Length: 143
Image (cartoon, rainbow, N blue to C red; front, top):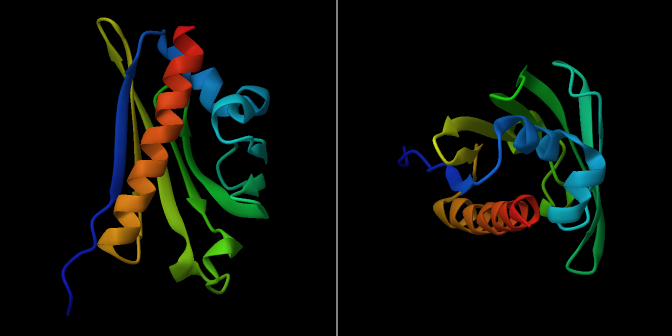
């Protein structure tokens, strides 16, 4: 049995109140501005579907998942599957993505954790992507 594959994790402190950060994570018109032009469609209600559509490295995509947990201004957990992986649309090929917000004296700390990675290298690549997304979010909210 091989060792547990690590989760991808990225974290950033944004100098903005938690309510503003939460809105940026859940409002599709704001998401599009920092998340590589992604169009998010969902109600954010637990059990409801979520889709992410756009273009990545010249290829159109439509990723999908389910909202697992939504604790306003605190925690958002979803599943995520991307056909661009080339893997079949099966439960074992879905990641879990968790957005956790923690109030800090000088702003809000956001941590994104992506589970169910296939390899440590996939986890490392995903962590880099999430760091870029969080960097864009920080820049947008601190403007």
